[in-house]
Image (cartoon, rainbow over the protein chains, first blue to last red):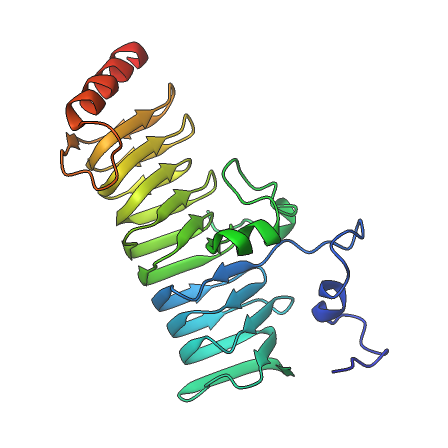
Length: 104
Length: 156
């Protein structure tokens, strides 16, 4: 998936940089692992990767990237600057807000 | 209280117990609740968990390790195999194996475990119950209790 050159504030661009590039390092994301189940309200101020189950509301800031892996079981609302969803993810009963990207 | 920004936490120099690299986290199958995250509700997990953010509710953690980092704030009862506290916890803690309170720990609640380590400087308000039903305790419970008593005496 390509990002237009005109987009300068896309958090994904910074995130794509190699970890070794000094000065462009984003803090490591929070990780909700595959065996984790959460039910409730989550407020995020950094990048987040969801591999497990979440039932409720996830609210991120405009610069945050929320990545939903295909192992995730989501119910509820997810809003963030970028919501990146892996192909094949079950998103029944889920509302996504922000820039939605489909990842391979 | 909620004013922390991610810029304050450069790539995982967040606190003592934090995983140093993402590959390490992956290898260990560890979930990370970062310092800017605030969660209210029910959390259960069957993998190691590092909490650097704020959690209020319930934590059912089964047979794995739970670490509350230096910036972690937890208002919940905790049940895990091993529990390491570097931050603040309000709630009862059940460590099936061992509970460790670092010098930066601030715990208000009762602790139930088979072994406990409390560093000099740790803040603790509550009761400690040493159980002999340790699932993974490598030594006889009586020895563990004796050791812990010795540590408590030397610390206090």
